[in-house]
Image 1 (tube, rainbow, N blue to C red):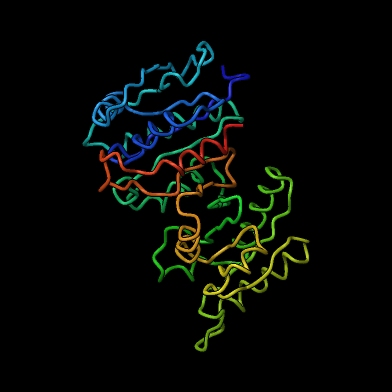
Image 2 (cartoon, one colour):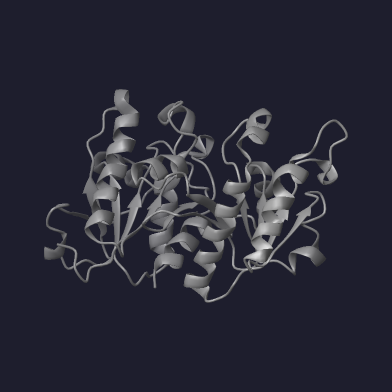
Length: 315
């Protein structure tokens, strides 16, 4: 069905996010080599196109007969998903199901998804899309979030957890898997062994009240990885690892929790980074921002992260 056919599959995500706006801007500003296929409700697409004053033509595809279409990006290629406002979660899950079906039929197909409101859609089933896709692809908890920039990338060991729970989800096994997945990705994609710096959890990598996570988990993991010839170093204090002289020495920084590494990377690169999920049967990318509901239909959103995501796959 999809032999010799490698489109980039894009899930529109939350219907009240800025994603369709930045998608329209991405198509206007760039010419991409591979065909883009947008998984979206057609009515939502048309309404937002009208509201934002874009005039793309639509090419509606049959998911079971994609190889019969000569695709290009002069039109917006879509796979339609039914939508009922009362069942928003169902719309999002059906969108992902269609995308996952295509990845199973062609292992060269990769995936980009627009942002979603996690609390409203995932509720308490999954911490985020990374964990949802890990479950759906039976990846056994080996998926890794990597915020990628060509000059410096970061990866949180734990993702969308309350701070009070972070220490419970840090383990030697998890940290070793993180380093292995990131190293494998850099080796396959860029033919390099990355230099990875690992932060501590506690201020100054120490605790006066108990045996620290650095002593119990992080340092033993680093020692093990060094013996296995991985290019790791640390633990580093999180308040100094992002200084200019230090980041020049590193390709990737692994932090213990989400904001420990995402806040600095966004302050350095802004929207020039993409969120890649490693450890799945395919590459999954999302722009490095949320739904941004307060900017919905204002036509003021920056498309750069989505453009970077598409270009990363458009080889």
